[in-house]
Amino acid sequence: MKLPQHIAETFGMIRQKNPLVHHLTNVVTVNDCANAVLAVGASPVMAPCVREAADMARHAAAVVLNIGTPDEFSEAAMLAAGRAANACGIPVVLDPVGVGATPFRLELVSTLLRELQVAIIRGNLAELQCLAGDHDTKATRGVDSMATDISSSADVARRVARHYRCVAAITGAVDCISDGEQLVAMRNGHMLMRQVTGTGCMATSLCAACAGAAPDRPLLAACAGVAAMSLAGEFAYAALHGGEGTGTYRQRIIDALSTLTPSRMENYIRLDNSGGNALLG
Ligand SMILES: Nc1ncnc2c1ncn2[C@@H]1O[C@H](COP(=O)(O)OP(=O)(O)O)[C@@H](O)[C@H]1O
Ligand SMILES: Cc1ncsc1CCOP(=O)(O)O
Image (cartoon, rainbow, N blue to C red; front, side, top):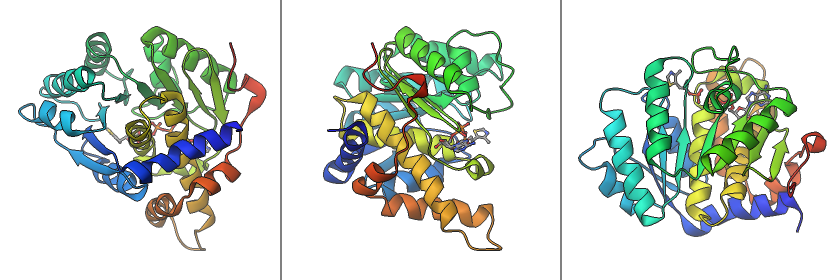
């Protein structure tokens, strides 16, 4: 089997298994994440209160910790959910939104990564550069950044994955996913995705949906989640008519996710081999 087929097969497992994805996430994009997860055949639930976060995590197939709008209660609830998930072998997927922007976010993410074993970290280049300890994180601008250069993304993804013993997924014009050894780079998506808030958060939730369906293959799960998001962005753009803008585009992204099939995914994934692709030592 070729790599796109493995990725597409992993995506297909979502509809077979209908995993429950528990989210502790931000207030900006929470509804988009819930709809994205539903669109691909998984079930979302959001239970951010510390009094039930761990109990809900135990029912779930995967847990998302997205630090987009952290407050003074976030750390306790995320730790409770994450510890419960770790104890039950349920994959935890971290989105370190804007981690380099404030000391509070950096401290929160450092605590989560010290106390929990995460399966997948999904973020943009600036966020993962920050986690890699790179000091040149000029790319940070609020919760946004740009990744066009495959060599930096590939290098940072590998280093983050090795350091935190997980899969690291860096999205951007090129998406680079690594487990520390193997690297998968894909060039799908559309630059208009940057004009719609939530495309990164949805990518993270989709990685969690895939990890919930295929917990034994986190690298392929992260590839499938990211590929689903990028392909939805690409197909949604192609479906726009004249006079339609980013509001319609946001809706069309959910439409594209809900109609995305494994065979379409397999056919449209564009691998970029210039950074060295999967099965690299
Ligand atoms: N310039 C681009 N060209 C194509 N796709 C892009 C581009 N920028 C981002 N994307 C896609 O948008 C989605 C969100 O990625 P990104 O913007 O990096 O996340 P974040 O919102 O966390 O910064 C991913 O599927 C990614 O591939
Ligand atoms: C705008 C904003 N501010 C805090 S969280 C958030 C949403 C970020 O979502 P994404 O990174 O997916 O665009």
